Length: 134
Image 1 (cartoon, one colour):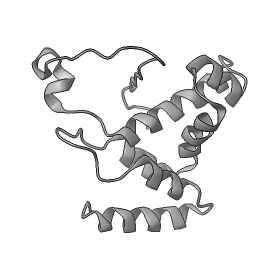
Image 2 (cartoon, one colour; image 1 turned 90 degrees about the vertical axis):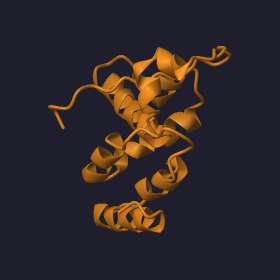
Image 3 (tube, one colour; image 1 turned 90 degrees about the horizontal axis):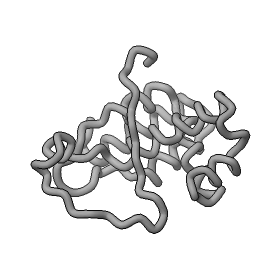
């Protein structure tokens, strides 16, 4: 995991306006978008690094820096408790060209709430099987 290229995730600032962009204007647009759960997990990892490096002292500091509520920061940070193999799999999900990825962030957070990594792995496999992603 240390040899992987860093991920850059950008979320629009609160109140920022979105502008329409043609898919051909951007190389990323031509390939699709990363699933939301991949983006949020990358953000959780980035937040954890910010705390580790002293750029923020706690979740409240992250919330202030990111203009988020503390509850949302806690939800995002919960993804750091996923078994390492699940995190890697989520980080390398293929981009989706149309529509949403079938597995939601909420479903993955439910898995992260399980204390046992073995139980997380089992539930992850069941979730993927239920969406025919195995």
